[in-house]
Structure formats: C-alpha cells, structure tokens
Length: 493
Image 1 (tube, rainbow, N blue to C red):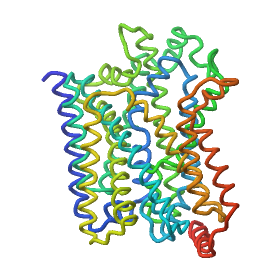
Image 2: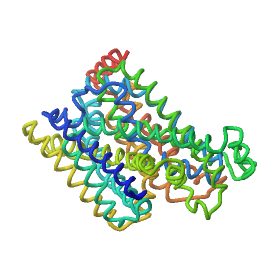
Image 3: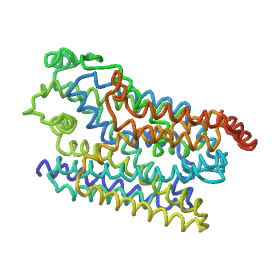
Image 4: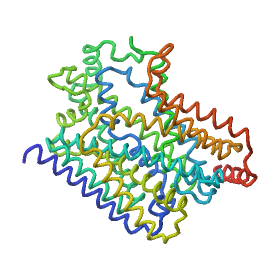
C-alpha cells in the first residue's frame, strides 16, 4: 500500500470513532439540559480535556510550533499568557460558576446565567449576549472550516471544498446527534490524541538526532540567539499584548460552559490539575517539536517551505505512514473539537436564550432538543457557505473574536461571581463598553509609544470593568440578588 493509503486508513478509523461516540450519546439526550449541558454530569477528567481541546484548535499543533521554529523562544510569551490565564480560569471561575449557575435558576448557558444572576427583567443581557455569540461564533466556526479544508488540500492534495465538506459533515453529525455529551467525549479523545502526538514527535526526533545534547547543539549552530526570550525586536507592548491573551479565557463561552457541566463545584480542583497538566505537556511538546524541527531542517526553505507545517513534516518523516496518519488526525481533531464546541454554544444561544426566553415560547423538552439540532445544522450550513471561498478576513477574525468575547464577557463573569454590588444595568453597560473598545482599538495602530499596537483585549477588558463598576455604583441590586450571591458563594466552598 502507498503512504497516502495508510494515512487515509488512519483518518477513516478516526472519523468512525467520532461518529460512534455521537451515536452512543444520542440515547442520553432526553431534555434540553441533557443536550446542552449533559445534565451536569461530567467528571473532572472529561471536563478538563474537553475544555483544553475546545480551546487550543489548530494553533497548538501548527501555529505555535511554526512561530517557535521561525523566530525562536521569543514567540513563547503568548503560550505563557494562555497557560497562566487557563490556570486562573480554573482556579477562580470554575467552582463559583458551577455553583452559581445552579443557584441562578439552573442556568445552562452564559447569557441565561447573566440574566438570572442579575434578575434582568428586561432581558437586555440575555438578548445582547446571545446576539454577540451568534454573530461572532458563526464567523469563528467558518474559520475552523476554512482550516479543515486547507488541511486536506495541503496534506492529501484533495480539493479544498471536498475537505471542507468532509470536516463539516462529520463534525455536524456527532454534534447534532449527541449534543454536549458527544462533544465532550469526542473532545476527550481528541485532547488525548493531541498531547500524545505532541510528546511523541519530539521524543522520536531527539532519538534520531542522537540525544538531547546533540539536538540543542544543532539548534544553537543554526541560530545562536534561538534561546533568548527577549529579542532585538521585542517590545514591552508586544510582551504585554502576548500575555494579555490569557485574559480572554474568562469570557470564552465555549470554554467556561464546561465548568457548568461539572458534577459538583469541588471537582473543579481535580479538573484544574488535570487540565493545566494537559496544557503544560501540550505547550512543552509544541515547543520541543519546533526545536527538533530547527535541528533537522536547519531552517532550510527547500526542506521546509512553510514553518507551520513543521509538525506535519516531522510526523511523516519520523513515523510509519499509518502512525503518521494519526498524527495528521490529531491536527484535524484540534480543528474539529473547536468547531463542535462553538456550534453547540450557538445552538444554545438561539434556542435557550433567544427563542425560548426572549420570545417566551413554551414547548416540550423533546421539541426543544429537535430545534437545537436544527439550529446546529443551520449554523453549520451558513458557516460552510461563508467558508466555501477561503477568505483571509474570516481567518483574521479569530484573534479579533477572542478579544471580543474576552472583553465583553470576561469582566462581567468575574464581577457576577465576586461582586455583590453588580447591577444588570452596570453589566449591560460594561459589555457594550468592552465590545466597542475592542472594535475601535483593533482598527487603529501606532499612537504615543505605540500604545495602539497593544492587543485590543487589554484595553477592552479594562473599559468593561471601569464602566460596569461606575454604573453599578449609581444603583443598587435587589435584596434577592444579594441573597443568591451569598448562597452561591457558600455552595462553591
């Protein structure tokens, strides 16, 4: 058999496994709570790896190794910011969000939590946050489908649109059928695949090079400054911008919704240890992959034209084609895990937050689940149509959307969990302020000291906090809101 045939067999095994998990989960979805949140029955290991896989996407296996291969450890600051942000998210958001969403009328989405937590009778928070999720995540999903189509085109020479259709069809199938439970367990498998591949590639590469010493020496010969974390072009603004990516975790709906599905707030401790352990191994593996790539390919464009393919190239060089096929499947797993999570969040926003509550539609649980599946399919079709012709603008929106969600929802979620005085009006004003600052800041550059080159997430996050604090001090939450706050804090201990 040819190399491509072996790799295709590996891909087919992976696809069959994902669909099988979807069909297994199908029988566990009797209500909207089951479909959207697995009836709050996830263990810490599934929650942790699901959150990690949904978070990292193809950036972990292609973007990060490529940047470190091309420029050295000076590009590692963003990984530091994300790792610290993920730890803080698990430590301070996970347990309280799990307890508070149950206290606040058993909220199963972030918009419903904000609405119920602050007793927003006008439903402005639910409407605004639901609309933001639908708009931004539709583009986010589309960018993931572009990545899937490009992956098949570059790895197998398939037509871009055929690859896009294949990725979209498989992902939609297990998401639509199995809901949150299927997404979480496929993410578990995908997370294990990702970290295993990232550890295996550099280990085998170092063995091939003759050991750690020879590998480090080879890299230093190629670039004596490779190990410097502060390069000649590094600026304070650049470092702060990279670290600021970690702030985005507090407001990413597809990540923090996992915390709401834990069996109990106390399991957040175990989840944190597993999740951050997974992340440390994954990031270290990505860095080691880049190092081995420099030692083997010597930054020779003839040997490796595109730095972002260093993981793919090493997998094909170092392993049997059948094993290399699973290495490729790990990249696809990273892409699909993010798409499926985002599809489910959009579906919940459309059905739970907009259709069911804003428009006050009372229907049976079985019908709500059916509507949610239809929403997943509809959004996927729209996103695929947007991705049918690759568009750099869509791909560039990923970083912009991360900042938008982080600045709009992040401070609001933190204030909801840790400040009794927050009011619905203050939260709504803060969300608007954060979103507006991100949109304005992200479209300018330069300024005194290059201040406008700062990643827009940081000023947007600060604007949300300031506006929400100021507006909330002009009013006062009802006593029932304060009592619920005390009950949620007690339950999280």
